[in-house]
Length: 303
Image (cartoon, rainbow, N blue to C red; front, side):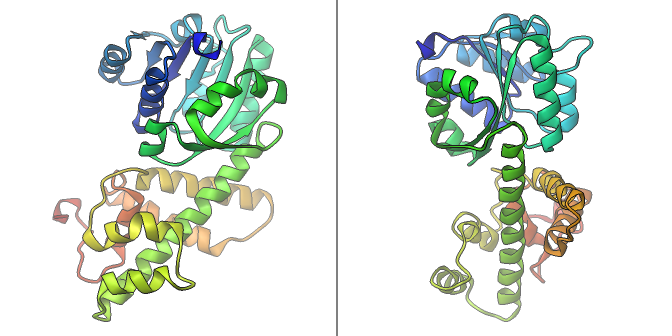
């Protein structure tokens, strides 16, 4: 029954496109796709046997469930605008699964607008990267009405290996902000540790082995350690997204009257990468700032 649902996608970047591919392979009809890059949408539509919608309203009209994977809060405000071209047009009875990492208040406002239009909205925060999106093994952190979640649970299960339900909309975004804050701090710390080890003349492969068997062990060591050593920064989670997400956590901390010096220092490092033109490197590229012999001041100096 679930695979009879017509699925639309808005946002066909690294994650959105691979989520669509996964569902297509599982037999779901991907009927409408939309991206700010029209050529990208047309190419995806050809691959997925769908229509490259020219407007957001067309996506809603041609789908039962719309999955949005956009970049930031302003994108969410735009695609769910209460005026002009919008996913809200003719949306009564439709379900929106919103996967962007944005402020909790943005998801809460989106739900309000959807409810006013007669639609349902869930926040579906994702942990994982491109391979997990492609294979349907994401870790999903979901917020919203339990009744709506139950209605589309098989679809969520086909996107994921595990799902945690956080309660009302807004709670999943708070949890995702914490996940990315700690991940980014760990990434920055590992880059400094390996940078110092290199400056001390230590064998970095041996350093990583010792880290893996001691209190320096982390998930980031597994995913990013060798990439930092080898300067292999093929993007899975970009530095620009890390910078954006770091500031979400800092804003939440300010709202809670907390000072988070490590989070703020990490944000400064990722902001520096963006200013230097390194924002589209993977987050592991933060190591370009910490190794003494590397010259990150000009992006073209990268090997």
